[in-house]
Amino acid sequence: MKLSYCYVVLFSLITMVFAGCGGSGGGAGGGQGLNGSITVIATPTGSVVNATATYSNPTATNLIGVPITFSAHIGSQTFPLGTFNTNNSGAVNVSFSPAAFNGTQTITIVASTGNLSNFASIVMSGRTLTVTPPANLTLTTTQAVGTAIPFTIPPAQGFVTITDPFTNVLDSHSITIAGLPVSSNPSDTLTLVSSTTTTNSGGTAVFPGANGTLIVPAIGAVETMTITWTVTDTVTGLIGTGVTTVTLTKTS
Image 1 (cartoon, helix red, strand yellow):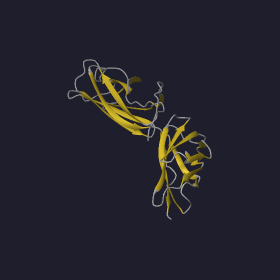
Image 2 (image 1 turned 45 degrees about the vertical axis):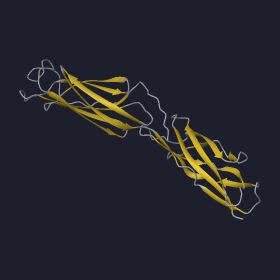
Image 3 (image 1 turned 135 degrees about the vertical axis):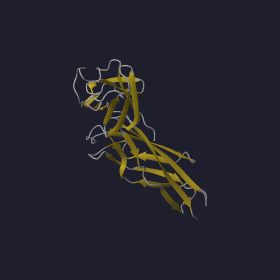
Image 4 (image 1 turned 180 degrees about the horizontal axis):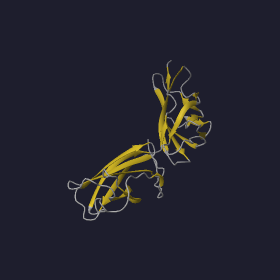
């Protein structure tokens, strides 16, 4: 399956959660001249990335008030997430949702303070499109060689499935369908009942059906049509493919 996608520059920050308070009195010096280190942990949950940065210092016990600056890196783009102060354990948490994307993305969260920095990378799943092609057809005939034998590929549920962690609205996606038949006889035909279909509230769309003909081959030979379905979601730009094979054998 081929996926296509684009990057949206804007970030939608769902939440920014931070613990601790500002100021350097009695704390770790507000990030100036810091010793120790920073560790970063990041996890994806649906469309949200959660990250925790923890500052540690072997010579200090009260680690409140250290300013930690966060940023997210996706591809060649960098998105600032803000600066927040640690709690008395030296930890601070952020949560955010990147703009909707197709396929998968590697997202790197960087946390820094003073001359200390560290990062964590995650692979996050975005929008996907899956094609479940109609079942293969196997036909036999006793008609004369060269006769055009009609066939029907009936409508089928679950032809296309859209998943989208960024929204619950999955219905009314207009899906375009193209069927490319390849067979040994140029007189074989294929016609789609419709070149479009539409997703329902569950993100699935029905195959509208197709009709065609295969030319009867010699006795014992098999006439084969391989159909590659290419579907495009006009809402997300996602593209998927699937294959159905129709075969015809002359038995006598």
